[in-house]
Image (cartoon, rainbow, N blue to C red; front, side):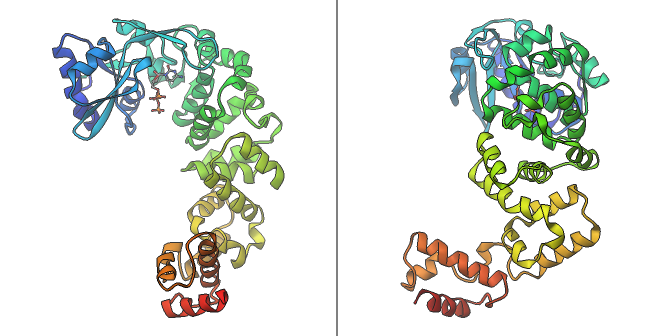
Length: 399
Ligand SMILES: Nc1ccn([C@@H]2O[C@H](COP(=O)(O)OP(=O)(O)OP(=O)(O)O)[C@@H](O)[C@H]2O)c(=O)n1
C-alpha cells in the first residue's frame, strides 16, 4: 500500500527519516500514528523506528534528549517538535509481566515489528509513504479486528497490560477481538492483577471514553476481566453504564469516572476506598465526590447543592446528558448555572493580593477560607460581586 498524500504530521517529521536514511540507516514511521492515518483518524504522536543504535541517532542530530535510552528511545528535537526515535529492538526477557527486563537492539525491521502487540499496531511506513505490512495488519484494519502479532498468549504473557490495550482499542475503534486473541485474554486476565494501577488506569480511562465503550465492557464482562481490575469490579452491575454508553460517550476522564461511579451502588465510604485503590488524583477525587451525589439525587438538587459544583458545570451537564435526564431537567440545571453571578472563582471582584495589600487577611489558610466564604456568598446571591461590597463583607467577617 502506498499513501499518496501524507498527513502534515508525517510531512513535518520526514526530515528526520531523511537524515537517518542519508546516513545509511533504515528509518520508518511506526505504531499508532500509521494505524490512525490509515483509519483517517486524527494523528497524535508520530513515532519513528530505526536501525541506527541510540548513540548513532544522537550523533546525527543537533538536539536530542535521552528519554528512554535504555530501551533505545531518543527524543529528537526539531523545529520545536519532539520525535521519539527508537532503535529496532526485541524484548525477549519479561519476568514480571510488565516491562522487558532486557531489550536487545537489532538491525532488522521485521524483528522489531514482530515484538509489537497487535497487527494493526505493527505497520511501518517509509519516507515515501509505502506501508510495510508483514503481519496482515491492513486486512485486520479493513475487517476491524484486534489480533495479536503471532501467539496471543505469548504477547500477553510478555506484557499483561496488552489485554487492557486490546479492550481499549476495541472500545476506541469499535473493532472485534479476534478469537485466539480473545481466548488468550480470557485465560490470562488474572495476570492483570500484577500490573501497576497507574498503567491500568490510563487504558481503562481510554476504554471508558471510547465511542464503542459499551461493546468493550461487554467483552470485558464476558471474559471475566472486570474481577481482575483494581477495586474488584467483578460483582458490579454495569448494565446501566453500558446502556448509557451505547448511544453517547464520555469526552473526558473525569466525566467517565463520575458517570461510572454515579451508576455504581458504592456508598460514599466505599467510593473513597475505590478511588484510593485506583490512585486517582486529588482533583479527580474531589470532582467525583462532589458531583456523584448530585447526579444521584438530581431531581431534588437545588441551587445550594449546585453551588458546590458550579465550576464543574460542564462535567455535571455531560454526565446528566449521558444518563439521559429529561430535557426539562437539563434546562432547569442550565438555568440555575446561567443565573449564578459568576462562573469561576477568577471572576470574583477581589483577589488574595487585594486583601493582603489592604492588610485585611494574611497569606495562608485563612486567605483560602476567606475567599471561599466570599465566593459562596456571591454565588448564592447574598452579596453583589462588587469590589466595595466584597471588602465591606470581608471586613465584617474578619472582625
Ligand atoms: N504494551 C505495548 C505498548 C505498545 N506497544 C507498541 O508500541 C506502539 C506505541 O505504543 P503507544 O504509544 O502506547 O500506543 P499507540 O498504539 O501509539 O496508541 P495511542 O497513541 O492511541 O495510545 C504500539 O503501536 C505498539 O506497536 C506494544 O507492542 N506493547
